[in-house]
Image 1 (spheres, rainbow, N blue to C red):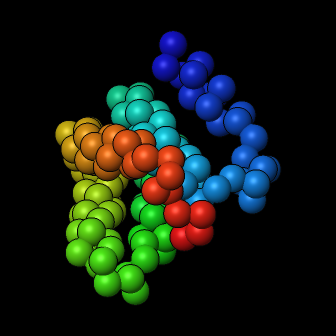
Image 2: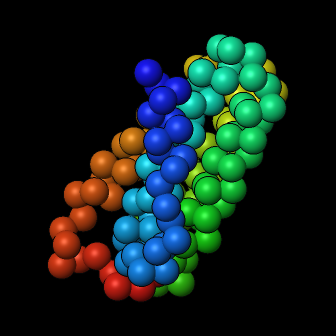
Length: 133
């Protein structure tokens, strides 16, 4: 069942990403990471090493995109941004570890972190969502 939903997920068109608000783009990245990591656990269990590596590499790149989106210039946002920068770096390192060791626990830890950050992101009131990164 999870394999079927992964196929459906991968068929979602993102050709309109430029039409999305920055808030929606970040939300899509969070969802993409969570979906890919769920699939990756299955790849590890089925010993599909190439697919596992591709998914983890993509997730590491997506964390890089999240890091690039942080506003480290605005003083009021600096502590939050710096904390997220460190957290995303930690997640990237955990995914490298997960790749080397086929470590599902490391993947679960990253999924838990991303879900918690995404929950906070989802709770930003609509009137406080910045129109630009």
